[in-house]
Length: 138
Picture (tube, rainbow, N blue to C red):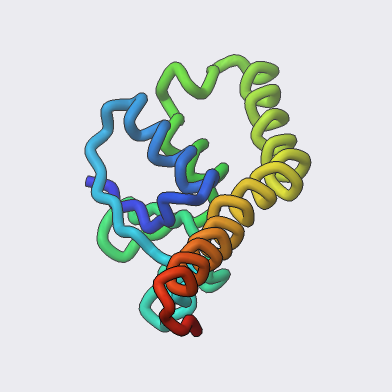
């Protein structure tokens, strides 16, 4: 069974989860919180020296990082990766476009909004409620 090391709020990790579900492929999900530095531990860096998620463990000790490489690996010999040379190239063209034109602008902005701005809104709300209750906030 595959094991995926990923962060649920990451779009790149979501792509892997979505394809595995579409393929009805059993897998184990290991949540890695990059905001807590869990992708920078010596144990994780042995899996991916780049310190990024997702990483697919294909078998014990065999790891494949990078979402689009994982997608191609999982899709091989399935209807998700066409057999025709041109169709395969067009699939790769989309994957490259997504990673280099969509991900840096839209996906990163989404991650920031859903992660850091959400945390800021929660802190602001907490402080406001605490002040109304007459408590001090940090």
